[in-house]
Length: 255
Ligand SMILES: NC(=O)c1ccc[n+]([C@@H]2O[C@H](COP(=O)([O-])OP(=O)(O)OC[C@H]3O[C@@H](n4cnc5c(N)ncnc54)[C@H](O)[C@@H]3O)[C@@H](O)[C@H]2O)c1
Image (cartoon, rainbow, N blue to C red; front, side):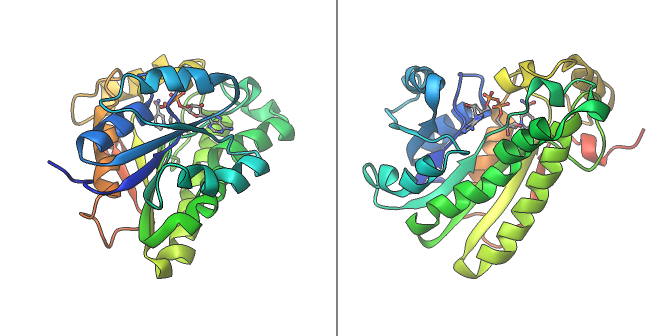
């Protein structure tokens, strides 16, 4: 189709071929974009290998979103491959074990702080690090899990997602005058590495089996990736500060 024809898109968060970001990168290329990936530390080689499964080659540049040196170097590292960016995908989440799985009342601040920094504050860090690459506006899209209610086991990651949601609205406010749109895709549960690190992930499957209006498949990251592509495209030009639910309708169902 070519929804992203001529666009340069930075995609964070490709770890395995189950990663939501992998499918975003794949669809972005199929829709005509030039894709640059980021990864970090020990998993960078893994991301490079997985990038080999994309329809076209994609460079992988180093970015630990909590590392000030990486953030400062990001603009230059991107410019080695493309002169500018039209879109950025934030597909990053992490919480220490003690912050998930039913230990909510006892989690210590350092563990909570890590979850908030990696999973929420990083949307601001990443957006600001890429801002000099935006020429006539841009679309920034993050991956969210509905934070309007308390979920089983999700604990401080849920709090981090609430912070991510709020961060995206403030970024939308402050960067709107530069025609930079900031939106989130709130996906239902999908079996990825991040999901495997949530003890009790099956409880989400149970909720979705019970409450989803549409049939929900936890092994299918494609619907969330498709929504991300639309937000990166020119087809939602006046949408910002929005949370687009790709959850089979669970957020809208009672009981
Ligand atoms: N899987 C789900 O059920 C689900 C549902 C809704 C939203 N999400 C969100 O989607 C996003 C992607 O997760 P996923 O499910 O594809 O899992 P994933 O494990 O494939 O991706 C998580 C990514 O975060 C990256 N990351 C962690 N710490 C980082 C850091 N300091 N700097 C840079 N990158 C870092 C990892 O390298 C990995 O690529 C996350 O924000 C997650 O919360 C996932």
